[in-house]
Length: 435
Ligand code: MN
Image (cartoon, rainbow, N blue to C red; front, side):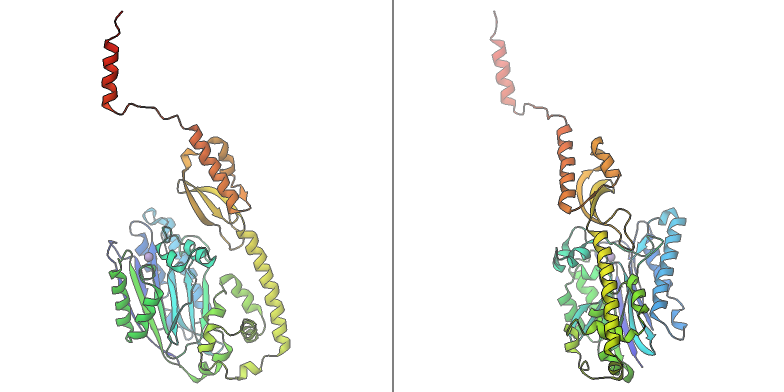
């Protein structure tokens, strides 16, 4: 049996007036939500997201699907409440949760996330981020355009690309990991990660044993570094694992292998008849992952491993290959396009297809600083018609043309006399001209 011990701390920070973060500390489901929206919207949204998990622990067995449905329920309730109450209009929240679930008769840890609150795992002394940030800067880091450190200081770091309660439909990432004794999990809002580097976070997690004390220490550190946002830290330690989990450990991949299974391809993943064979085949071609080398039991043969036949591995490899190619094409079609539209009164470049393709929504690529009201009439058709461009450079050229035209249309600046001495000398010359 797996046992967990947990502790958490949440603080308003040094600048904000209210704490819009919410958290739920176990016993089997742990959640951090970072609310956003004016008035009381943020607090209401994050509190509602947490409440969606109430009663979940009374179930005989919690499954990852159950956890994902709870997030979808949270999305519906926040979305509907925001539509009903004008004061709460547009509210939303991030959500990251970890839950002890049962899959295939074994204990697993399920992690779900929407938005830029994060889940980390400290294993063998190494800290790794399990979740992907659904944010503009998160996309830029994944594309290699900026580093994680640059993201922490980026002016647009607060723009999230997914949040609970904003749309009727929501895409939830989910990850499954084996509970290993000694592993430590961290859930946190961006108020921690914008102020404290991963190295400093790892330092605290390695040295402060008590989860409450470690969480408080991280909150204090974020406050010392500025505390520009609300800070919430929740730590979950795996304190005991059963023989079952240890025996299967070698056959089940770690976070790295799971990290690209987002909501939409979970269905594909489950459609494979022998799910364990899939797990096995997805680990093998990738070679040893950084984590598997640190795992003391990764080389131990198990019953599960022997059950995998080459035929099933080949079958799964073909299916995975076909699905992968399809996803790649869809992704390429959906994201290798740009268009120019008005965002918040400003001419902005978006990446993606207007309206999105499948689950791939367009994302704000860059704002241009051009006020929508200044756009000359001749460009309005292209902007309103969401004309697409094959590259970012072409979209930028279009925007440059708009800017140049605005400058041309501006009235020429009037010249004014700026010094008093000139005025005086002019007066002197006029007085001498008498016929
Ligand atoms: Mn925040």
